[in-house]
Length: 124
Length: 183
Image (tube, rainbow over all chains, first blue to last red; front, side):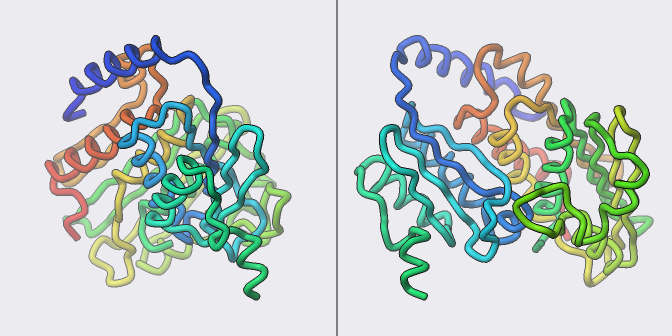
């Protein structure tokens, strides 16, 4: 490994932050990463969420993955779980849309209705 | 799948679902013998001969959300399409080894793609699984080993965004150093 030493700095920085952290209200962002999701472009979507969480230093947002949700033609699919709120399912996601979801929904509190599965079905 | 890095992301998912603690991904660019060899080897639950004989059948899957499983059939087709082949060996209780051989210079051989993004995604999605990624180009090699990372990071989980970001940069630089994926 080429830049292994840098991990030590990351460790020290993160451990400092963890000791200051008290509450974990926890918004969960779940990206569908089965064959269908991967083929449709889920990888840049997931990495875009991780990048935003890092860049904006969002301490209570967790990005994770799940398998096939069963709507393969609507992949990449992302589910957002905010504590005390109903799950919001976004379909046909992109890395750019992921940034908007962070900005408007996760930080701003307003789900982006036009990207949701409900809006997609209504359009049809 | 557009490229081999996406196949890797997909195939490794099988290993994780099989309960693997360590998944070894090896990619070897052997231009002299005109071969590109991809190996994914895990210490997961393995498969019995009956299951093994059916995994490249698109209408076989262990999943219940849908009736098809396309990961291994896609990889097999991609290998065969570039004059190579895919083979799987598996032993229940020991693990599974998938080997796909491609014609390196074959016009239909998928590009390698972004292995930096694939490794970062795997670490982000499966922070409790260990990965060893080894990429060889001729006599040059690059390794990413999450076991060593884990040791350095101590209590810091591998899916920490700063660590995931590190993996992406680290792998990209490491591969550039050995001239990986130049074709």
